[in-house]
Image 1 (cartoon, helix red, strand yellow):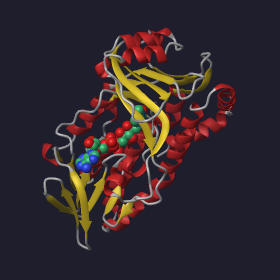
Image 2 (image 1 turned 45 degrees about the vertical axis):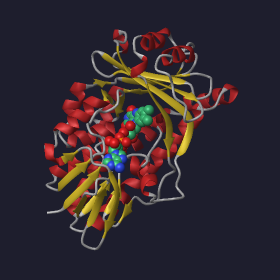
Image 3 (image 1 turned 180 degrees about the horizontal axis):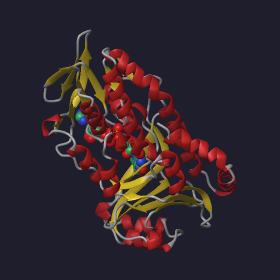
Image 4 (image 1 turned 30 degrees about the horizontal axis):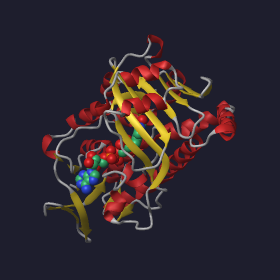
Length: 380
Ligand SMILES: Cc1cc2nc3c(=O)[nH]c(=O)nc-3n(C[C@H](O)[C@H](O)[C@H](O)COP(=O)(O)OP(=O)(O)OC[C@H]3O[C@@H](n4cnc5c(N)ncnc54)[C@H](O)[C@@H]3O)c2cc1C
């Protein structure tokens, strides 16, 4: 029986472990954090992610813990629609609409599927070595673990930590992002809707949706230098001032939270890689194809990786071939997502007249073209 090691217990690593164990492949996840405590933010799981969870018999539980989005709408500074995705329409083609969920709830659901001994916490991976027989993961405490294959699901900094592609640098989008989950109920008619509202200013937008009956997830992006941080006692005033042009419900949600609940991340990706594998090692999730959050697809792409990697390792006796087949099946789509999401983000970084023109182009994109784009993303 094949035996594997996964580094990282994020959404990618946990989903992959579940998919592999379901195929009868023995695998252990090693995570550097002392506990699994996903940050206080939400996540939108698009139909492609939900289709994978359906195959892993987890879709119902995820839907019950989250909120189904019947409408996802991007609006401009006048409140006019730039684009919208209607749940019923997507469901009729793709079986699921997008589900909004608290990240911690999703992580708990995933973690619960795995036997306790299969997720080892407080174990920082530092490097690996391999020969024709096996691959060995080396940890900061000196422990060495050998297996038939090693999957690096350790996030966006993976390749730079290991110096795997020295020329390949993280790329800053120009935007920083504040996120928080707040006890709040949107008006009844908006409970199953997600809205993203764009300002005419560079990079400024706000997005929000209910993620369960009692909580709303809010994010705010702005064009800003990287590396800055906030004083928790002043961050709410800063966000209130930044968001003063948005509908008053945005200010109400900011006022209903606490500064210590607000997460701030500079948004990075890296330009698509041309290879994700090295013998018995494969990258997956953000480690392979970090993307900006503009399409809400980063985690969904990691979830897709999980299914493909498990299928390939199940079908092929040869680990090298299985990992290469995974790369070949997944790299084109993940590259498309990274590139499209990057371009989309750069549109939001414009201002004034140029932004008005680009928004008009988006608004008047024929529905058939938008549908094709969505099919490309939502089809597995
Ligand atoms: C603002 C924002 C909003 C987003 N919204 C969405 C969305 O709505 N929908 C969506 O699909 N995606 C979204 N994403 C993207 C999504 O969050 C990521 O793509 C996803 O979390 C990647 O999962 P992962 O498992 O690959 O990596 P991560 O979640 O980064 O997990 C990596 C894990 O590896 C561990 N690790 C790291 N180094 C080591 C080491 N050396 N040894 C051991 N363990 C290690 C880390 O502690 C972590 O637990 C968003 C991203 C951002 C920044």
